[in-house]
Amino acid sequence: MLDLETLLKEEWELLLLIVALIVLALLLMSGIAASERHAASGGESGSGSADFTHDLSAAIAALSSSRDLTLQRNPFFFELPEPAKKAPVTEPKTTSTVVATDQTPTEAQVEPSENTQEVEEVSQQPRYSLQPARLTFVYSQMDSTGKNTALIKIQSVQQNAEVFTAGIGERILGMSILTISEDSITILDARRRQHKIKYGESKNIVVLRQEQK
Image 1 (cartoon, rainbow, N blue to C red):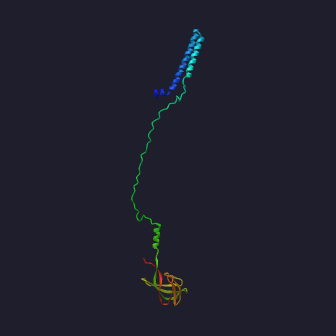
Image 2 (tube, helix red, strand yellow):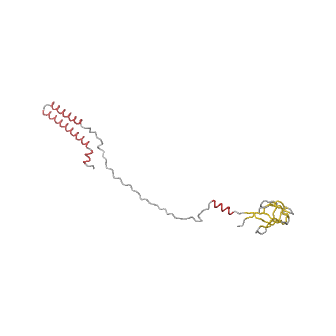
C-alpha cells in the first residue's frame, strides 16, 4: 500500500476539489435550512430569500475565481514500483585447447609430385648411344618364300660377336639393309652413312646400342 504522506503529495489537487465540493454542499444545505426556518416563523421571506441567493452567488463566484482545478494526471492511475531486474545469468565458458603434435611426414607419407614421376619415367626409359662396330658379310641365301637374305656378323667393342639374318629393308642395331646379292650387300649405318661390303669382307660401321646400366 502507498504511504499516506506520499498519497497527499501526489493527490493534493483531488483533495482540494473534494473540499470545495463539501463546502459548496454545506452552503447549499445551510441555505435550504435557513429558508425553511424563515418560512416556518413567518418572517420576512423576501429578505431571507434575497440573502440566501446573495450568499449562494458569492460562494459560486468564489469557487469560479479560484485557480484551475483541472487534474494533470488520472487520479485513479497508480504507478507501482517496478520489480528489481535480475542480473543475466551467464553460462560458464568452456575453453578448448588444441594439442599440436609435431609430426614430420615420413617417406611413405610423402606423395611424389608429378614432376618427380615424370623424372622417374624418363630415367626408367632405355638410353641408346652410337657405338663403333665391325660388320662382316658371311653369305647370302634365299629363304622359303623366295626372298634374298644375308647372314651378317657384327662385332662391337667389348661385346661378343652377334649373327643376324636380315632381308632388304630390315633394320638391325640402327642400320638398314639396302641391297643383297650373292657378291655383296649395301647398308646404311646408324650415322646414315652408306657402305658396300663384298662377300667375306669386313668394314667398320656405327651401330646404335642400348647403354648398359
